[in-house]
Image (cartoon, rainbow, N blue to C red; front, side, top):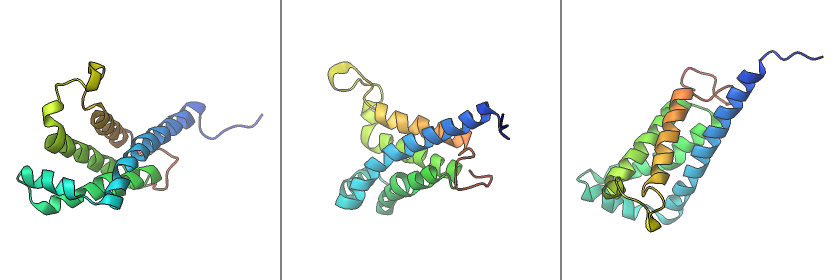
Length: 141
């Protein structure tokens, strides 16, 4: 009977980390790709309305394109996941802060549940790291 160098629980742990990374970052890419295709004019407006300098709007490309790609690849996973969490916190602050204590349409869900999923999912990835199924093998993964 063949022996595995890694116990089954460790392999399942790494598989779980991969699934979490792919889910959080993969779904977030669907929010970032339209910003490449259509631009971020509306983000500029929100940033300026919040009193921040306009160049901050370009951070959406980092938070919703670059960081998710890094998380999916498992390269600089922890810092990239923290960037995603900061991006979501900024999105809630600038665009959805009035909805934090509200229910969504129809009253059947939290109004910011999508943003919360990305925020807390990214925090979980930052805490857990990439696991062994990743391109990066450094301490930041």
